[in-house]
Structure formats: C-alpha cells, structure tokens
Length: 404
Ligand code: MG
Image 1 (cartoon, rainbow, N blue to C red):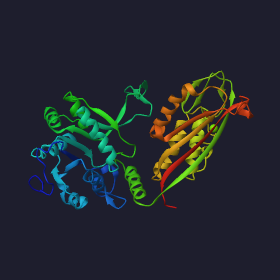
Image 2: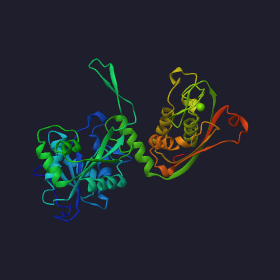
Image 3: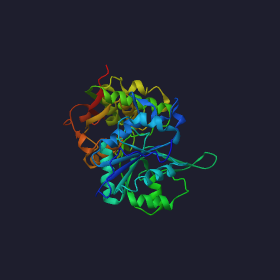
Image 4: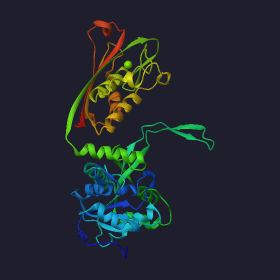
C-alpha cells in the first residue's frame, strides 16, 4: 500500500453545519479470536465483520463520511471486506490511540462538527445506539456508549486476596461508539500524544472535556475470543432469517418460615417472617425465570439449577434469571416484555413497587413501559389468603429466530 490510502469515493462535505463523520478502528490483528484472518475480516452470518459494522454507519442518515483505520498490510482484505461501501482507508499506528489520530487527521479538510469513533469488532451496534450517542454528544460535547456494571466488583492485593468490594452503582463498562466535537477530539489527541490510552473518552477526559454516557447494549460486545466470534456468527445468522414471537408462562410458590425479610424481584423487603427455599426463595424471579425458560422450550428452573445441588443454597435468584436470558441471547432472541403478578396478603408491596420495577429493568434491560409488575391478594382465601406463603405468576414474550 502506498501513500495515504485515501480514495475519493466519499464525497467530502467541508464546513457543512452539523456534519458528522465516523472513524472505524480496524487496525488490530486480533489473533485471540483464532482463524486465518484478523477478526474484523472474519465472516459472521456469511458477511465480513467489517462490512457489517461499516454498513450500520453507512446507512445512518446523520453520517456523511466513513474512515476505516486498518493495518497497512490489510488493504486488499479491507477493500474486499467492505465491498461497495464508500470508505476511506487510512493506515493505523503503533497503538490504538495513534490509529484513531491517523483517522481523525484524514478528516481535516472535511472538518466535520462531530466525529464518532467505533471499534470494527463491535458489529452489532445499531442505528438507535448511534443516534442516542450523537444526541448526548450534541448536548454535552462528548458522549460514550456504556452498559451499567451488574457483576459485583472486587479489589485484591498483589497475592489475589480480596481487600474490598467496590460500589458498582456508578460503574459502567465503556463501549463504542464514542462521539466528540471533532476539533476538541483532535486537540485532545494532540495533547495526549505518546500515551497509550485505551479509548477516546480517556483521551478526552485527560483534556478536561465533559463526557456523558448513553445506554449501549449487551449485544454491542467486542469480538475478542474465538467464543465471541462463534456467538457473533450465531447472532448474525439469527438476525438474518424469519422471526417469530413466542410466549412463556411461569408460576412459583414459597412458604413462609422464620426470618425477618423476604426477597421479591431481587429486592429485600422487611417482614416478620421469611420465605423458605433452597435459594433466596424469590418467588417473583423464579416465576419470571420459568416463563423465560418456558418460552424457549428449555424446561424449568429446577432442571437448570437442581435444589439437590448445594451450590444454589441461599443463591440470589437474579443469577437464575440471567442464565435464562443468556439462553435467549444465545438463541438470537430478545425479551420483548414481561408481566409479573405477586400474590400475597402481606407484606404490603406498594411501597416497594418502584424499587422492584427498577430492579427488573436492570436485570432484563427492558424499558419501564415493557414491564408489568402487579401485586394482588386473594381476599383472605386459600394459602396466600391465610398468610402461609407467597405466590407469583409471570408471562413473557420473546422475539426469536424461526429456526425450528
Ligand atoms: Mg421457587
């Protein structure tokens, strides 16, 4: 490859107000994913990863130019991969940061108002994610896409012994795209030259810029390992074919026993009794998990987490739900909505409704409008009426590839 590798297929739009360009970072050689070509050129659902990623930006109405930063040895592969899309190719540098800077510099003449930087290895970015990120950048000057940290985070000493638990409620896993005022990001990169910062938000932060976070998606993962590549292939195939909506229903009961609280929808609720059960006895999440498993023909919670297995003793039930939702994702599916009813005389659930609903939003990734959460009594009739236990019913609908 010679010169700057630019070509003029992309119409530049110099000085156009509000113009936005995208820099796709594809310079890595990604050997961890296996295969004989770097992961951004591997095929998922029959299509190179890079083409799929570029296609999302090419189709987005706000984006008027696309630059792909590639390894100097990969130009032929890169051109073949993107096919007919109008993309300028730029050689990458020694680090990610240097590669992005090379991509930014090629846009100097166009001088877009905003630039989006995106990893080529995140092919499941959507137009919606791009739009949200750009909206936030327009409001705050810079924005990244991220997902809230849901795992408990531990800190260790040098020997690997836990020294503390990090509060996670303000922790995010950063994804791309990341959007910036073009001139600000160029200046920030020039100020940070020679460092090895791992994303552009870090470059912007170092320059003192305000960076907002907009919601990303678990599907917007970065292909790193061979397992990621296989998952991406399954997802791409699933997205390409016909789809159906399936529904599932779940029902669960736990009896009251000694204790001072119950757990419902993952929320601890003070009560003069507890619920008996092998796990945390969260009947609401158990019913929901069974609904999800039922919808995809995956049996029930007992099959996946037998109560004869001591490792589930006292377990927080969100892990059961996460497992079930993981099976949905693996099948290329997506939860559309859920409707959950908790049945008991006491405790009164109204004061806890909002916390429970928030927890369901966190666990499922659904917006509030797609979550029904209700509580009812049975008018003092039956076992729930007599205060012997709590029952829960759940229904879900799931969007699934029609592969059967
Ligand atoms: Mg149960």
